[in-house]
Image 1 (cartoon, rainbow, N blue to C red):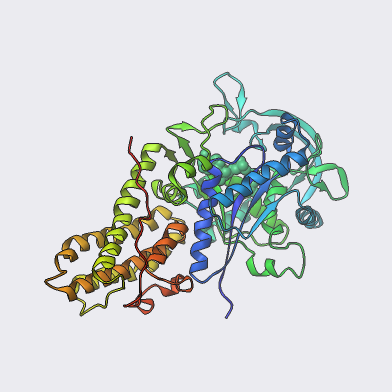
Image 2 (cartoon, protein in one colour; image 1 turned 90 degrees about the horizontal axis):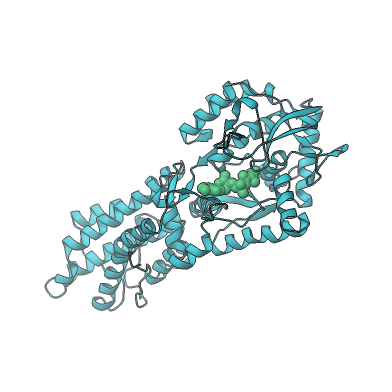
Length: 513
Ligand code: ME8
């Protein structure tokens, strides 16, 4: 039987600048989902990449004294390097300057055109280069200097140029119907309400080409125009599964995508424009868009002009990769805004990783090493406390899966940590070190139960902390082919008698100053 599929995408990032913590965060969330689904038996496609056309990138290239091609080659590479450092397992890395992508964009354009969804006119209105977005006069706000600004605070400029338009105004009702039928296709629910009220406010036709510069995909049949960068960018999600090839197996297999993960800043593009383009072209919209929140740095908005960009490479260097991966997904309920601070990072790492999880593993493995001849001990009859702890470990997958399926990473981790804390409580109550001479069999049972619980904990934390979880699994002699989720539960139980290597600490502790 064919395995169920799971297609998850990150936004493709603008190559105007080096990647920062926000970019790492979005891709990390997708990496955890991709790893989780693979371990849970899915055939996964995980896509990320870079958005390389448009006015913003062209201006950044000019400012760097470079031609756009050289510039985008260089900056795009930074995002690939980040993926490497963060241990991301994306199956593809798309660049919008690739030929496969121009073909897909032009094909989508032709489909829209053939269906009467495109007409030529003139755009006269406000445009923000930073947001690469058109704004209605009524949406603008007054900045502190009295100048008009985009709702995001970005500068806007008046633009007047010939432009092709997409008949977005025809799609409002269809979008509202779709969201009524499938409310979970925008999460969190609060964000869905923003989308609905934007649609209910009435949709205007959307300008989808530019003529005042040429860094983009040419409009088929009219070389004076290039496509609006968002039409170009959104199309990446189907380019990467082989669109428009009729025999594209990947398209048939993976489309519609299960999840477009985005930040809240770009929800409108993904939950209004993109499904409208797809439906208008006769294609299916994605199953879900999840818009997560915004990170600030020690309470301040992260921005280049404030000079407070958090470089993911620097924090990984300081705290280690897995602690950073853990912190980002545990500290903030996924979907909410969050604040990055060194104090909070150290607290989480020391409290949850070194004290809770690290100590559990370290104490149990050193007791086994010292008192059980470094072999998984043979259990005797299990009592109530043993069975209760084992059953909470056996129930982990189902509970964690439910949270992961709604992208509640913080909740998934909290569920796992409840079992870690229960296991530490069990160690304290059973006090196996006191049983060594008086009741060696009971000690063996307690340590066996704990080894089995640690096996569950390490298997289920692999998506979040692949390196550390892998090292724990090495230390309890769980083979590489025994680490997927089908091994969770009593049937995959750890083998008594297996020889274990000398235990080594997995989670470092940091000075909390
Ligand atoms: O918008 N906190 O690219 P982009 C959390 N090219 N996430 C953040 C963040 C922060 N402070 N800053 C950035 C674009 N992000 C388009 C996307 S998709 C077809 C085209 C993350 O480089 C978050 O995911 O500006 C946000 O949506 C994305 O980076 C914006 O990246």
